[in-house]
Every structure is written in structure tokens, then in C-alpha cells.
Image (cartoon, rainbow, N blue to C red):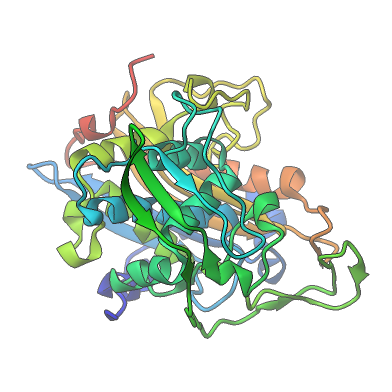
Length: 413
């Protein structure tokens, strides 16, 4: 296993060694964030903001600033784990190096160890058949839980974690499936992943049997026992703290850098990158930035801001994101945690920046009861934070205007 990326260890240094515009902006706009910033232990806010400037060859230069960053403090990442899972799934396909096998190849999942279920059709796909590409589109468009779970099954628990660790992303553990389709699985049954087969015109191209993972995936984290009560798997209220020690985790720095390594692979050494083609990158950029109303497969009636928390998370369901703005991101929300990890681009004004943040909103300190202050506190905080940084970026002097054509993956509005 490789040592963690030096980049990760330097990130907090940048925020301290330079005057931090992030801290200054938060202080100057304290009234807009007073409720949250006055209670850091309650809301557990962590923020990373990266400025991007381009040189004469359009190569990016990064300066990162942080607020409340603590790599050892536990927060539940929820659906943000779907992002590295999607990246790793594309890499695995490429590394199989099987003629005719690609992200669009139909696949079928069998059922081995209970409570696994088979999957051989997908009514939301163009041809009615599941594929890695279609699963990834669903993951980013509407944060589909079952789509992620199938990618997790294709990868296997141990292989997924090993793939990420070997690239230097070590402050993470991805141990379980998500959502309703993941609910029947416990810690042990999540180690088992379904048999998977890829077909082309009824010809078997690749078969992977059921896999059992013996991944220890141990981390030394603080604050994994939380709250004063929780609802258990039987739906009963238990007056004891909730234990997150067997739950997924990815540090905010890891999430920030995982997004950056896919957006700007040339800024990382080869051993830290995913094995992706240029077509894979364009596919991911389109999937990460698509709006529900733009999608035909799958179709969705969700509003523009459904999975775009920064800038727009507090808008109503009729709001339409302006066509010159694109957000390449992944959000997560569960157990009172809201997280967004994003690259924001304004093609009209030549603006680009990276922003990642997490906030915890669980006033009654009871987990799994569905009572969280997402709408009242969490989403407004993230939306205001996004707008604050965006307004600053609009007027921030740049040595030269960036060429952002690499990220123009959607038709002009």
C-alpha cells in the first residue's frame, strides 16, 4: 500500500501559510452564517475551497484553504461514496482488457449469499438492459442507491478499498451498500458480493463469481459513537448513542482530491490517477454535471437543484440553473449529515473553483428517526456558502482567462 499523497498532508498547511480568503469571507459575512459558525461542535462544519489559476499553457495551479478541517473526525459521508465507486468501476472495466467489453456492455447480476438479489433488466436504460455506464448516470443524476450498490457488487468490497488505497486515498472505508436495497444487509453479508456476467448479443464476455471480502479497513477516528438515542433495525427507539464504527467513511480531503484527480489528472502523478480513457473522462463529466430535466435515460422529474446543494440547494422546485453554470459534483445526505463536493464552472465569465463542505444537523441527537434540519439549516448553509465563494470568484483577479472547453460536454442551451 502506498503512503498517503503528500498533497493531502500539505492541504492544511496552505490554509495556514497564506492569508485565507475563506476565513476572511466567513468572518465578513458572519451574520449569514451566525447560527452555524457559533456552534462548531454541534454542526461539525468542515470546508475546503480551492482557487484555480491557469498558466500560459492553460495548466492549472491550485491554492487550497480550509475551515474546521479535521481528517480524524468522523462524519457520515452518505452518497458521496458513490463517486469513487463509479471511478473505480470504470477503471476495472479498462483493466480487464477484454475485446468488446466496455462501459456500455449489458451485464447481469446473479444472487449468491442471501440477501442478494439478481438483476437482468433495467426499464430506465435505452435498451432495457443494465450497464456500468447506465448505473453511473443514475448515481450522479439522482444519487440512485441501487445503482451504486450494483457497482459495489461488481467491484467487491476489498478490491474497491484496495484500489483507492493504492492510489493514496487511505483515509476512507467503504463497507456497505446504501438505501432501501442495502438495508437487508448487515456487516457480514456486505462482505459478499454478487456474481456478475457481461454479455454481447448473448455471448458471454466475462463472468465473475461471488466474492467474499476480508477487508479489515480499520481507521483511527474520533467521534464514531454519536447522539443520545437511535432507531434500530427493528424500528424500535433505543436510548443509547448510535455506533458508526461499522459505517462508511471518507475524509473531506479525500473526497476533494478524488474529484480533483478526475477533473485534472495531469496535476497528479500517474500512480494516483484512475486508468481512464479520454472518452471515459468526457462521459464522467457529462454524468456529474447533468441536470434531471436534461436526461432521457433515465427520465427524472426532480428539480434542477435536487443534487446541487452549493449555490442552489435552498431554491424552490421551479428554479432553473442558468445555462452558463455547470456544477460537477456529488452530494450525500443521511443521518443528519449533508455533504457536497463540487467543481463549479461559469463558462460565460471564465470562473472555476473547487468547493467541498459537510455539515451535521440533528438537533434531537437521535439517529435514524428521519428528523433532521436539512431544509431549515443544512441546505441554506451550503447554498449560501456556494454563493459567497462564487461571488468572490467573479471578482477575483486572474492572471489569464481559463480555457474551459474540456468541460463543455453538454449542448449549448
